Image 1 (spheres, rainbow, N blue to C red):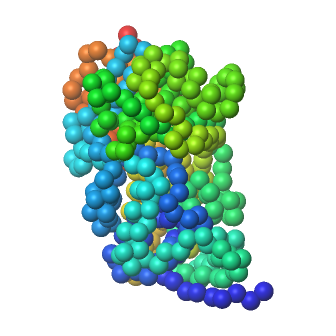
Image 2 (cartoon, rainbow, N blue to C red; image 1 turned 60 degrees about the horizontal axis):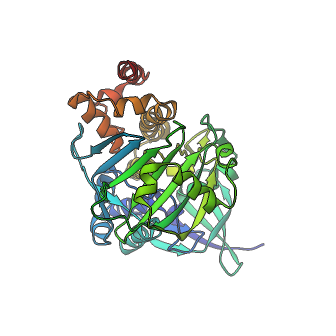
Image 3 (tube, one colour; image 1 turned 180 degrees about the vertical axis):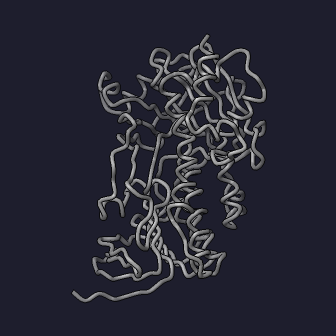
Length: 413
């Protein structure tokens, strides 16, 4: 069947944060960029609490003003509660240089702001177009279906897959490999929270609450600038099956088991955005690149929502890929494994150590310890703020995880 054929230098599949920041960075290099997105924007997505490290990439992409002027909720840290124990981190008190503040964002709006910003910078942006097939190689190409059902072909110098949880190229090219993380799920919605101004609650911080009885079950409460919160609970799927009713009833019951959240949300209007559930979101791939393509953000690897690392990893992948593409067009030979995959996975590994320690309970012993050394606290704070690639930080350079384990043991005694 004959297709129309289009040609572009860079094709980006998916207009989420990874795709849009990559597009904007490539436009700054003068590259011709076509970005196609299967869904119509604005559309909902999970991952609503940014980390300060993200701001560096937004700024480098030329999208800072777009984000600042959108009026999102200012964020300067993270608060943690487990029963009577509570602690908070101000991201400005971190070890690494760089941004110490960021935003909590409704992703429907945030992703749209970034995509429109990339378009403003000269990216050709198309919504509703779906990739059906891909041909990797020196001159990669894809077959695309338009909303009207007609098909066309795009030939490119290089393809970036930023398709997020759709994981398009990993599916089409059989790159998926099982994650070694236990399967977990999340039930979540938006509530109009009506949290009193005099409550012990800082709207400038994400609140992460550990379930009173189950150390591996936790809740997120992410305040927005419009009087709403994103509220979710994360657990292994079998945990949710202990509760009666639909997902909204399950979420309300589990939230009701935590006294602090029950108090804060006593007057909340529930489900102003419908309740959703995702399960088994942790993912991995055999390779983050191949002939004529690379995988960005969640299309390559997603860990867990606990430390809000997803968007930061997505932006980092966009930055590394755009730098590799710049060298390619400068006539240099690019080793995508050494220059893209290895550095990206190094930061992911840092986050992974923290995530594993969180679910095992050791990290919680560290953050709630009554006698914390300010210097160590600032190093931990840096990683919580997203600075997982700052190898001057001993807890980033700690490849074996030994330093973290020793700290856990000290805090446990």
